[in-house]
Image 1 (cartoon, rainbow, N blue to C red):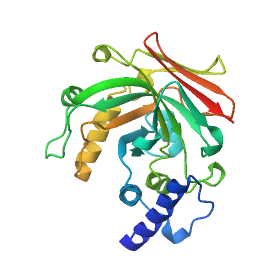
Image 2: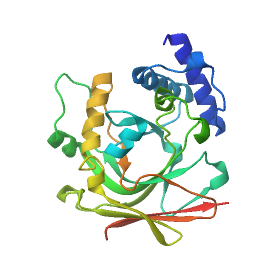
Image 3: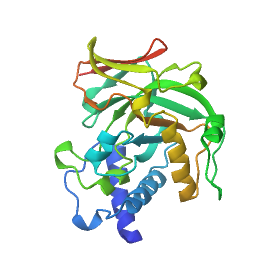
Amino acid sequence: MDIARKNQFASLLASARREARQLDALPAELLPATSEDGYAVNGLVAELLGWETLGWKIAGTTAAMREKLRVAVPIYGRTYRRFAVASPARLAHAELLDPLVESEFFVTLARDLPPRDRPWTMAEVIDAVGAVQAGIEVAECRFPMAKLPPLPAILADGSASGRYVFGDPIRGWREGLAGIAVTLEVDGAPRRQGSGAEVMGDPLAPLLWLAEERRRWGDGLKAGETVSTGSTTGMFPVRAGQQVRAVFGDLAEVRIAFEG
């Protein structure tokens, strides 16, 4: 994919982000053919927007999701600080684009994981973590769910990055996250259940994976960035008027009211 087409597609996606709308039709010649092209376009979108970045989202962290996406590895994308809010949150459903809620561990870095020649180790990644919080990603896509383009275009859109609702801190996270049970409740009823182990065996494993990805791209991860490490309870489509709560064992919770 040549740079002119990358820039043209990035411009369309940046406009859709600014205007909170979806793209119903895409010229076939603008669709990226490879994941590398998709990620490159996502970087161009961030440059065009000029928004303060929050960090990154990771998806496809379970075998079932990777099979559905037809990928062998997770996927990821840029996130933006203007779409980060604290729990309890109230979101206007009418302003969202086919929203899906996902219960996730949000990991914020205290130190850089810069590009370097040798691979990162899990011990080094853990040492760079400043805080872990319970969170809900409200994923949104700039393409209608009924007309999704091939995966590289989804990557160009930041892998459907959306809103990020920060809940309570997970105190004692260094003692382990895999065993924490997570329940997603909708209007007070449990609808999805999982655990930290659903996320590549350990919610910090995707962080190591992403550090290696961005090391390969030559920019690394930066102190202050938050990484949403992948859903513990799968994706749940939410409707206007619903109340959502994600419960992380007896440690933390996140609440969202989706107003009509």
